[in-house]
Amino acid sequence: MSIPILYFFTDFGIKGPYLGQMESVLLESGQDVRVVNLMCDVPFANPRAGAYLLAALSRYLPEHAVVVAVVDPGVGSVRKALCLNIGRRWYVAPDNGLLSMLPAHAGDCSLWEIDPSLMPVVSASFHGRDVFAPVAGMIAQGKIPQLRPMEREAMVGASWPSNLEEIIYIDGFGNAMTGIFASSAPDFHGLVVGEQRIWRAPTFSSVAVGELFCYVNSIDLIEIAVNQGSAVEALQFGIGHSVHIFGEDASEY
Image 1 (cartoon, one colour):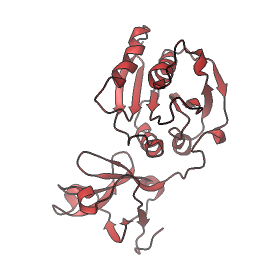
Image 2: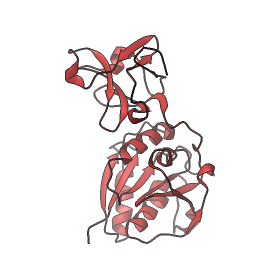
Image 3: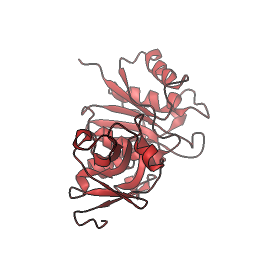
Image 4: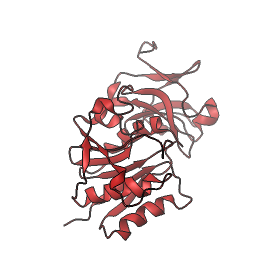
């Protein structure tokens, strides 16, 4: 029997004890799982940006993936804890919109609320360790915990658009991902950022060194880049900056 794979999707970064504590909870309980750090630099305290990144990345996960998604600025408040099932994939996360784009892009789902009181010890400030990781570990082992059914329309972010015309992530090279899924806009020819039009190109080698362009990245999001340079430095923008797509005639959609 293969070892279940559990994926962490967080804004924790690589420093500090947080990822290690979540993995330690799984190991201490004797659960035989393999942990993969899918993404640890989701924009800080920004579940809205995280929702589009998670939906994009999920397309490339194995069908039996179990994901612990923790971008949780409301930890310790009355916000709910959720468990989402789509096909054979499972996700556990706070109810702050982080899971909201998965049904929009992946289809039918089943949604439940987790009762944190079922956990032996729950701190006020680290539900990733005390709630989400333990529940995900149980699911990875085929032991579904006690859950309360919940309607998808009741989750935070259920009314968010399926595409977000904003910058949602900036990587270490200065490339900027948008929340626009290219498969939903096959005829786009470029982006408008402020007063500037940025034309689409297939990839970096398609443009001159130093040239600004946009393209469809490896997870189907429209991204802005500079060949051997930084789009962020060129445009002086950041997370949350508005963008708009335009078509062949250069008119905005």
